[in-house]
Length: 217
Image (tube, rainbow, N blue to C red; front, side):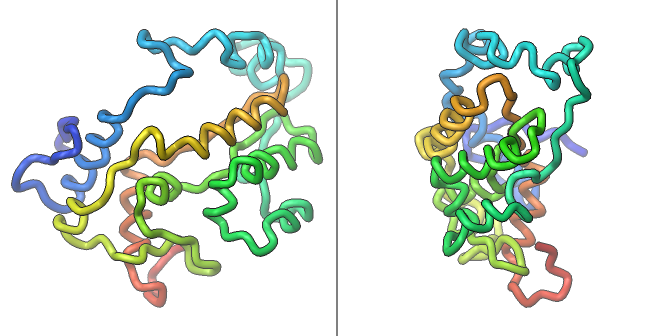
């Protein structure tokens, strides 16, 4: 597969299809400001949980660093939400993406399984399409269907018209992380993000009509 050069959000003339979209995404990422939690040298800030001692002795971090943990660390993919009754209660009447973008609510959902099951890490509650939502793309999670765009992206012109994600737009996520880390104490927080190649098929499926038989949520 040919390497796509990083851009500043303006893909090369004549580039179309997947390569155009990926170049746009990589350019947006390159153009964003780095997190204040990371220094110019790429090192974590002094008050990061891994450096200030909060999570140093947790079973998960001890195991990751090759030590002998006090117990076998356990966490579950998608442990936040789904079947927990407290999750169903706080989510009543609130759309999925809205739940992700309300810092207090996203933090509470992240913390619920840690309280209930004493797992060894919190899994940050979010969704793979949140970057699209924060960039200004009209996207929603339709129950039983999955992500759906209000304006399908099917051509290079559609891609060129997409807004860029800014660092400022990510503040609801940063605030939710701050709230969660403050409550977790010695328990680490794990977050997941969709890489450009992961977001691409999700974006494509979200552009299909909701009634398409082959559509995967």
